[in-house]
Amino acid sequence: MNNSDFEPRIVVFACNWCSYAGADTAGVSRLQHSPKFRVIRTMCSGRVNSVHILKAFEMGADGVLVSGCHIGDCHYMFGNHWAIKQFDVTRDLLNMLGLEEARTRLEWVSAAEGPKWASLIDEFVTTIQQLGPSPLRGESTEESFGDREIDMEVNG
Amino acid sequence: MANTELKGAMRCLDCGKCTSACPVARFNLVLSPRRLIRQLGCGVDAGCGDALWSCLTCGRCDAVCPQEVPITAAMPLLRADVRAEGGKPPFTRCGAMESVATIQSQGPVPQNRLEWLTDDLRTDPESKTLLFIGCTPYFDKFFVEHDVDTLAAVKGAIRILNAMGIEPAVLADERCCGHDALWSGDEKTFSDLAHLNLEMFAKAAPDLIVTVCPECSLTLGRTYPERFEAPGCPVKHITEVVSEHYEELEFTARELTVTFQDPCRLGRHQDLYVEPREGLEMIPDLELREMPRNRAAAVCCAGSWLTCNQASKKIQSDRLAEAEATGAELMVTACPKCLIHFRCSQSGVGEEPGIEIRDFADLLAESLQ
Ligand code: FES
Image (tube, rainbow over the protein chains, first blue to last red):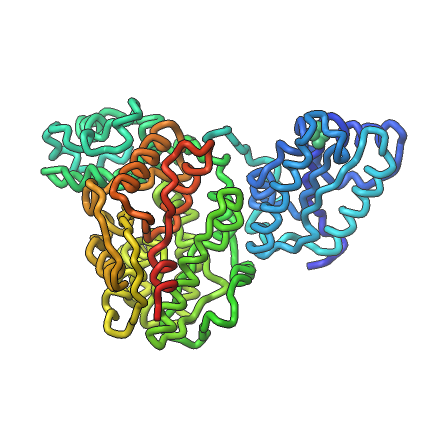
């Protein structure tokens, strides 16, 4: 399945205060990096819980990267500590479902770290490119991926 | 709306026994089974909103209905209709557990679901007795902060079967049975999961399927045969297996006072009231004290992935208090979901009755001679 016309579908969750700004820094500094990812801005990495990552894979993502502020720098103090806990649970669930560990990653990128962002993205895209399509993709197609509306109300 | 399938609604006498029996209606003003059934019987579009998702489908209404109106059975149909029209269930945790099942339904991906299996638990891939693990490995990961050990029931069941001279098969490519998908009105995920499981059963060709979860035994043992005329072998909950094989099992005496929580899927849905009690009483010196609301009148754990609100919490704390009032040291249940939901309700600020909750198979295995 590992061919050159494989277009990986990569979802990146980036926190508003550091990583999203870091992505911006990479952009305004005109650092060349792969465009093959879709960023979803969250207020904090701690907002990204199991369901966001699971839904991404359910809908056909090939890789999911969660990025937040460095430990100690979270705008909400401990959000990224919470992110680690939730990420570990999610990764265990995904491992049980048969997904390779390298398809999910949790990283810290500050607003100033444009170069780090660019190299992280390149590295992650290459990893996913090498792994090929996710085994959990199901019948999802390029059209259905990203088109499907998801409605995640917060309940109980 | 699914009025055609609900002809039984016409039989309703409007007596209101169902609403009196409904544990949810006591605390949640939107749900009234009587109103719901009357609306359906009158052909009123009972779009039902929250009422539809608040129902626990625990069957307490069915148990008292003098006209045998299939109230609980109407729920998945009504929910499927609402979903077909674009309605979404208000899933707890934004639907993360639902997503785990949906991912499993999407294709044959090898899972890593047997990592907990240790050498002292004897299993045999060739065995004609298949132990269906269900979602327990996922539950224990997912509810890690509630310190839930639902796999203890599975390990217990293996030990019990081993003591009977059976080394059961456990399969790595097992899927969720589809119970929650079905009851929340998601027909597609349910039948995709069922077909993957049935393919697996066809290969393994078991003579008997044993489960520790009454939702699994209900789904595999009743719903699959009704819908797909398969798996074609008996499906039994571990409580049934134990009570049938009492002569082969020896237990150490234990001075324990326990009470039994009848899971709704085990009791009202499958009529297994006697078996778990017989099983518990096989432990010499164990004293079983009944809660006032037991057997068909038992109140369920109020858990579903569809709603979790003040009504659920109230039902749970009342039930825990009822269990504690019996003077029992342990509340024994025979369903992983009961364990999860009661533990969850105990995990707050410590004001809930803290009675210890154990699974039937776990307790019995621990008491084996
Ligand atoms: S705000 Fe960036 S991790 Fe919390």
